[in-house]
Image (cartoon, rainbow, N blue to C red; front, side, top):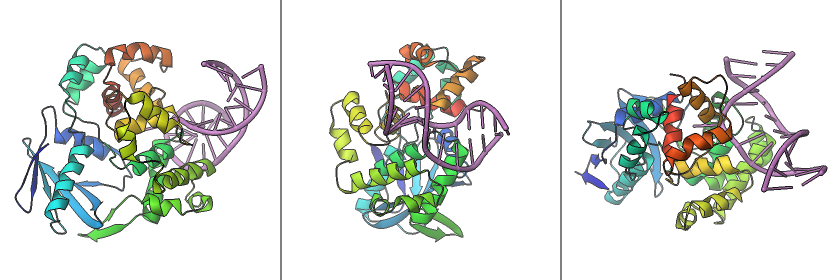
Length: 302
DNA sequence: ATCCAGGAACTGT
DNA sequence: ACAGTTCATGGA
């Protein structure tokens, strides 16, 4: 990771194959999102490091990413963690050279890899947030999923107001672990979603489940198996979390409806492809299934 | 009304 | 191991 810190502004130097503008477009597509906002080309996000609330104002000049701190500059050690956070959020640890090589020789990926060149997987570094968001999104339309998330965040998350705007933090697992099913049902969570999410919060709170532990596991298979053993986490959710939180470029939520629709749209099919057909198409994508999926999601409805 | 949505657990074979 | 059923609620 390369970055500079002049005491007030962080300057982060991303690897090649990164386009901040493309990432901003993706971040702006999610209507109803409460965990970040975009204004005048700047991305704003509230995070918490060592019990300190830090508002990030993130911009870019094509050579680097600049991070400013509108509500006050955090300590030097905290600024270092901010740099880590940005690095993870935009998946900057990934070398995309190979992905673009793969895409160049693939009929489905070639056009979208070109169109969205420099787009990276926008990650969800916090494991509890990644799992909760995935569970929320199971089998409901995205519009409603964002609605549920908004209610959840505004009911149980922490916030600050700056310049007339409210910035929210995702609720902590400690807080959610204490809730009853009924608390979440009030927000129109189904009984199952409420059970799953409170269960995940409990597992993280008492240490049975942690990002560190998952990252220590040897390979894709072990991590996937470990995730699927959690109640409420099936194959789709495990792959989603591995791609959005654990940085596995080979994670592949193959049953995803959005993926199916995107392939249908890209190829001009009459109906959605079957899983078997997708498996065949994805042979070319080996090792980069997560990026293929992400670019296909990006291509939806354009 | 009807079908579907960025699925998963449960049940029966 | 695998297929069918149930859950659950809003969007279009």
